[in-house]
Image (cartoon, rainbow, N blue to C red):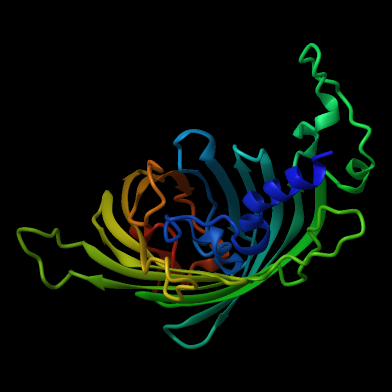
Length: 343
């Protein structure tokens, strides 16, 4: 039987997700809930959105990831919300889904700075779809027909799905023009082994992220409208031996923004590693309470013809404001991230 060989080949492809990399998004600054539960309720109003990522759309290498969220504040200090993640790899038919409840608590450090503590807990499922494996004894060599079952005893030792409870936590410090945060996901390191008696703890995911807004209020010019801002942002991610640093700038105007973010590999683990792995272009358009975002990641490594990575996002932020939070107002042009000003 070739069960062991097939399983080895399958694990070679899916181990990247199991061992090292949670799904990540290029538009992290537009949808910061993908990074850190401390962003829950930061807009002081109803805030919701969805983002779709298609990675390597060329043929069987396609990977699709969707993330959706909704949150609001229940008091001046407390925010609550929900997040849903779904991730599917076409080649292996591997699927990862998770639904979480999120909670945040705000502490005013001084007149300018605030500390937000976030906690996220929920239920996850990894589906390896071993039932799609075709084993040698299922093939009738006389007529080419396929038997629905196998007599191989090893099949019973593997589970198609893994269900687990997950915990993540983080914090964000923010003021009018800057924000800085840290997240640790999978704090309880849930077991995601696909064998009946295995024990494979999921590696924790670290993200360190921040941004600073440069305003042009006092320097109007013919090229830049008076209310333009330049966001310099960065996001460092690490999980097991895998690491990535996204850094770049986004020019924001009243109704749209343009940005470029470089995805880098600062800790190359092999001689073939690339410091710069992709150049990511981002465009967003704001219409009333809605913001549409699109990004395209241009591959700069030697991975071949991948046709890049596409992301589409749609976020909604209600114009209604929390009555209990009337000592703050939200700068809508900042799409919900660190956009508060004392009045």
